[in-house]
Length: 205
Image 1: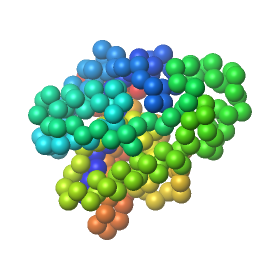
Image 2: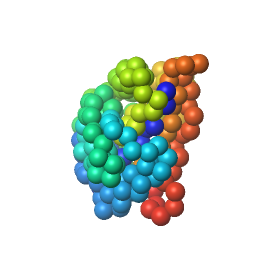
Image 3: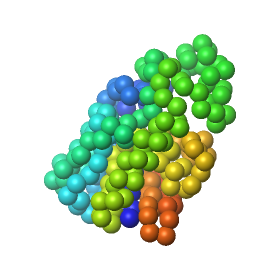
């Protein structure tokens, strides 16, 4: 089966270059436009699904709602699809944290897996995301649509690609409302497409 993972639209803290984690700043006006465009694109690509899955964090849930409003789909929330927790880094700027904790930031950028801000590790995030993906693979559906976060997409793709955990460092950051397609089960897991941007119209980064 295929899992289409969609990153949420642009949030206020994306624009302000702040760590979000499991806190939430809400979608910007452009983020809502991205969500609306993503919904239209998804209808063209995968049709009108009766049920979709989403992180329960507002920025992902609101992105999923744009598709639900267009199609009448039911949105099932799952906390396992949340972004990685960055503890007390949430709401702080990238620049501020880099100045205060350069060693931790450098280790993270180098592909190591420190517990940032007292939150989760990427290994822990991958465990819960992959558990959710494996459950979705058992639904008997041919395709599943999931609205989630950049970190969850990175670890989910790393899992499907069979990379040693956490594996996120091998995956480029997903852009707002991009689509990533995973194949789970059958002849094995694989990444079919990764970080496919919205087609023209609403700028993403």
